[in-house]
Length: 395
Ligand code: KG4
Ligand code: ZN
Image (cartoon, rainbow, N blue to C red; front, side):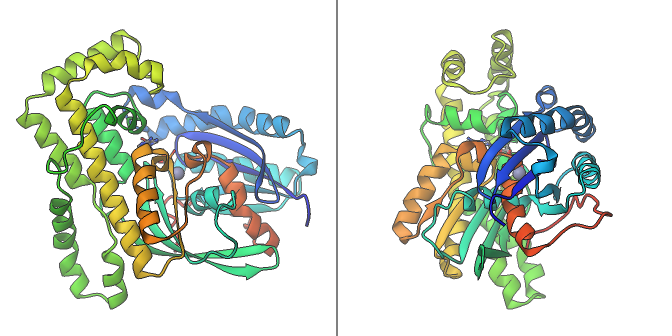
């Protein structure tokens, strides 16, 4: 089926996105409308997200088709995110995709958002051919999951299957980043701000030691594990936790009486109109004089522990399961310290490693089209009754 075009729609959280992708890996367009409204609330408000998707879906899809220079008549299929995500948000994308597919007599393909994140990397073909199994870390504001992805030869490339081998027991890593950022009076989403500010501080690994968080993991899961199988025991070894780290940061802020400085800084950022800004170099330069060394060191230390926790779990799992390569995807994969740390660890372990380009690491529809491609080839289509699956799992 050469030259087949998929139009994909993604609306699981706070990005309305549509993309046209040829043959699963040539991105003709990838339009992403980010919902700015949530920044005033310091987090995604589900009802507002659904309403904003409703507003954006028609123009976003139209623009994706226009930029690709195609019409519905040129398409081979419509793909849409089935889950996991916010029910109301998913419903907008699914409802729209279903009617478009029906109206244009096109098959509909349902895609797991997490598989989409993995395909954001696979679509760029960065591993030597046939590298499998891969250890995949999907790390974003909603997910922190480890998968063993196994590719089996298929006439049109590799068909992938997944096994979940680890996850966060509480907060997602991106969520911890955002919550700590909020605690420190940074704009939402705070992850990219923390990343940009951390380089101006010095990490002290004694501030938030990994050992304390690890103890908590063992403590929480041990009684449950006693009743479970060896396989479950294996898996739990690669579980992660971020809420203890977040609490440790809160205690540190209280102990060092940083609250009034945080309020002053919040006020200063607002008066410079930076409270909704992105952490571009010019914005960081303006904001930096309002940060003291204590705060910058705290940010660097938090980041060091958070990334250390991810790297420990990912590379221990890669070794345990004999992975031949490592891939990292999801919003937090954009983090510069994470990339540096994972590159170093991969080199030490002698494993190839791949990250998506930054535009493909956060939520987007091109990755949904990429994950839909093998399903199109296999004729795996969704029924007319497709509904949102907010709790959908992978593996
Ligand atoms: O994949 P994504 O766009 O949406 C979800 O599925 O959650 O990820 C967004 C998350 C947010 O928590 C954001 O703060 C985090 O990814 N993030 C980062 C960075 N860029 C985005 N966290 C740390 N460092 C970054 N550079
Ligand atoms: Zn995502």
